[in-house]
Length: 308
Image 1 (cartoon, rainbow, N blue to C red):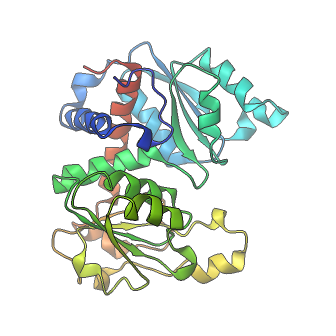
Image 2 (cartoon, rainbow, N blue to C red):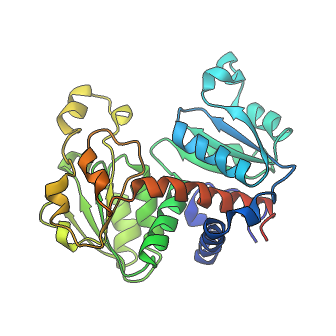
């Protein structure tokens, strides 16, 4: 039973619980009207201490499509934290108004700390460069819906693998399922953190290779997960400028890929996918946005205990 649980790190959910969310999301994709009133009378608070139009709107759309209501703020300037209020006091106050909270914070661990102060379920909507579990549910639902499986796939992740929390969560999630292989494509300065290799991949005997050359591996991939080089994570602007266009997916690179390979991206993109790729049927990043709303609908329903 997921009712009343917090979602801070998807690894804290069992594989059966993750599958349960994905199965409900799949039902919602197929018959959304069957679920349009199940959260009637419930309130979701979206507390975004860091800007994120896409994720915040996805949560809000999810709750509205379940028949619930929303409150919240989109930046710390719009909350009492700008007056010096502590995180615990803010959460205790909001929990008096809302049944469930989606929280984004620039500091790693902030949602876990907040979960100690309240009983209402907290959903981690991204904490610094650490975790983004609902993006992972989004990615899993997208891949399962399009490829028909979450096992036996060769998954290429490309770009900023050092700071990219979506990539870290994706690797952890897909390492649970048999037969998956990872190809890690990045410049030396943006390689995947060592702990992901030792504590996730090597520990679970997951096959992986690291490379700087995307052209050499395009033909091997079932999934290509592109990521943005995140300017906000760099302390030195010169380094960002030097690395930001390390990989640009274009029509010529797509010609090297399998006919059924799909391209995903957590968005927003900057320059890492050429607009000409949008016309390719294998470009699935905007479908991914829609699946994200259904994944969050299913998660909210499960945590509130209103799922059918």
